[in-house]
Length: 78
Image 1 (tube, rainbow, N blue to C red):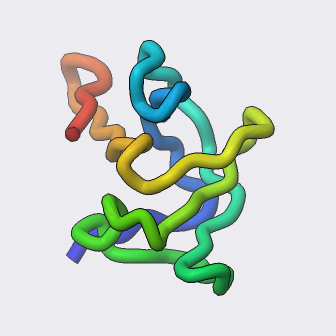
Image 2: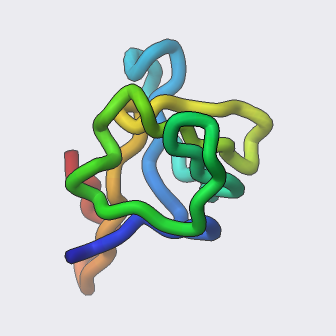
């Protein structure tokens, strides 16, 4: 199972997921107000998951997406 970890670069959409996507780094992950170092990507979309980002914002899990890179460049996985 793939996991989201503190320090990962993800794609973030501000304004409740409506803004254009930006690359940001996860600085903290909380599940029900408990700090964790990682969480399975299959659990990230829950509103119980909140992440702090290196741009000074926080986001619910549904506002971020996994960033995948290949030889053609970055691919965003929603």
